[in-house]
Length: 124
Image (spheres, rainbow, N blue to C red):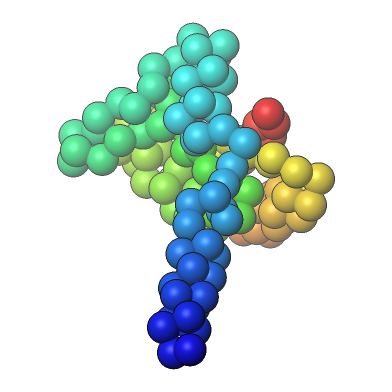
């Protein structure tokens, strides 16, 4: 009996912690490459301190992130802007309608703090 319970617990653990539980429609890199190419930008640009900017265009240093990671995107985009001398940008990936709340949060923080960050919605 104890072996059966242990196996059941392990099964549930692996099921709930597997990548499939947090799966996205596409990988972040897919969105980066597609959008950046359309903007005539360069993907994964290595900066002087060896960090990588997701997309560098003529005007912007852009961070791509899935919707729920919007707070991280703010810091990264501002840092890439400092490193490149270009305007900060965030391409926020919204894969489902409920992700729109993160778009609102992102832009509220940008507006309320007068941050110089351009934003774009990316959808599948």
